[in-house]
Amino acid sequence: MKTYFLEQLIASSNAASTTNDPVELAPCVLTIGNFDGVHLGHQAMLAQVRDIAHTQNLDAAVMIFEPQPREFFEPAKAPARLTNLAEKQALLAQHGVKTLVVAGFDEDFRSLSAQAFADILAKRLNVKALVLGDDFRFGHDRTGDSQFLRDYGLDVTNLHTITDSNIDNDHLNDVNNEAARISSTRIRDLLLAGDIHAANILLDRDYAITGSVVRGDQIGRTMDFPTANIDLQRIKPALHGIFAVDVVSLDENGEVIPDGLIKLATDNNIGVAGLRPHSLFGTANIGKRPSVDKGDDWRLEVHFPKLKADLYGLNLEVRFLHFLHGERRYDGLDALKAGIHQDVTDLLEWRDNQV
Image 1 (cartoon, rainbow, N blue to C red):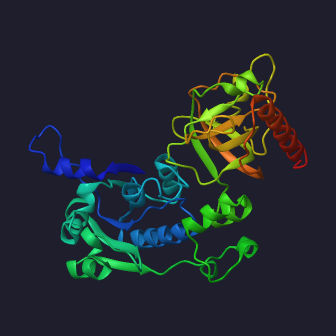
Image 2 (cartoon, rainbow, N blue to C red):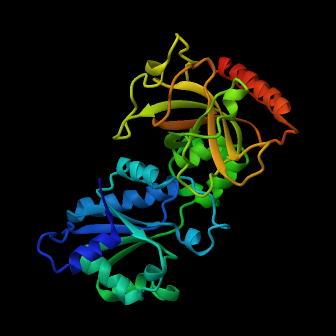
Image 3 (cartoon, helix red, strand yellow):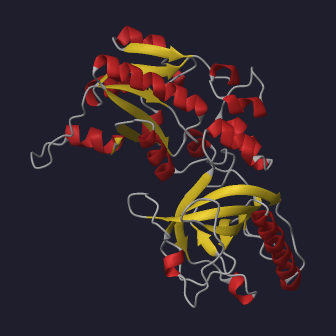
C-alpha cells in the first residue's frame, strides 16, 4: 500500500518546477472516513471497494483525516482513538487497500466548497467511483452529499449502516443485538467497560496498541517494578486501567521479530512467556499518570515480570488480554508499591490459568 498526504499531492500538481514531477495516481475507487479501529463495519465497506475495484480494474483507495475532525474542532472533547495513523495504515493494507490518502484536517480543508472537494477527487486523485455511507456529507458547512457527487459525474455506491445482523460472524452471538450499529463508539464503550472479548468480536481481531518505548519518570525502578513507557501517539487511549497483556517486538516493516524481547534479556532473566508466539507476558497500566502524580499525561506502562533487558527505542505491539480493575489512587509510594505487587501477583495467577 502506498500512502500519500493530500497537501503534498495538491502542491505537486501546482508546482511550476519540473524537478519534482506531479504524482500521478492510478484510476481508483475511493471510500472516505475516519476508519478508527477498522472494525467489521469498516471491513464491509472495504470489501465493497475491493469488489468494485476488481470489476472495473481500478485501484482500491481510502481517504482518512489527520487529525480526525472532532479532534480539530474540540480536541479536549474528542473521542478516544482506537487506532493511531500507523496502526490504521497497517490494518488498511491488510484489507487490500492499495492507495491511502491522508487529508490534513485544518481550517483550509474544512473551508473547501463541495465543488472544490469534488474537483480534487476527480482531477487530482483520479477517482472514478466512490463507496460512501448513506449519511456522508462534505464541503464547507456540509453542503455536499452523495447526490452532489453523482451530479458531478462520479459513480457513487451508498452502503447502508452495518449492524450485527449484516455480518456473517458466528461470534457476534456473544455480543448480540441485531439492530445495534457496529461503530467505533460502541467498541470504545466496550473497551472502557473492560469487555475486551466483546470489543475483539466487533473488531474481528485482538485489540492492541503499538508504539515505541520512550523514557518515562523511572519511578517504577525505585519500587522494583521497572516499566516500559509506550508512546501512545494519540490524544487519549480508548481503555483505562490495569490489564494482562502480551507483547511482541516489531521490525521497521511492522513484522514480528522472532523472540525479539527474549533475545535482549540479560543474566538469564528472560521474562514470562506470553500467550502468542514470540511474545512476553506483561502487566499494563493505561491511563492518566497514575496514583501519586495527578497530572493529565496519558501513559501506557508495561511491567515485564522476571525480565531484565534494555527496551528503549523498540517498537512494541501490546495486545490486551484481560481487564483486572480500573485506575486507583494511592496515598503514597508505599501504598502504590503494595498495590502494584498485588496486581502483578493477580495477573500472573490469571496467566497460569490460561495454559
